[in-house]
Image (cartoon, rainbow, N blue to C red; front, side, top):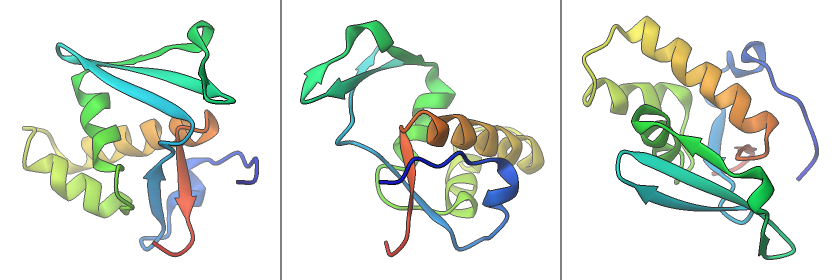
Length: 110
């Protein structure tokens, strides 16, 4: 996978699919939080552990299978009482950070 930096302007196309990079991270649900441990040569890197709150965990789970931003927003609107514009902004911000950390990647052909 190429090392690219993404920004929200790259996400403007509606048919871009994104997916969790499950080969590079181990995730575990711990109460209402999700803990992500990056893997390096199949060994956990405990110095770079990421912790997600409930909303972040739900966004991440929505990308387990390849999905567009529109699909994820529609799914999460059913679970959260929030304005669509606010949720979309949160998903795009989360996605930008996740892509730049290698947690999620752009899928060319889902």
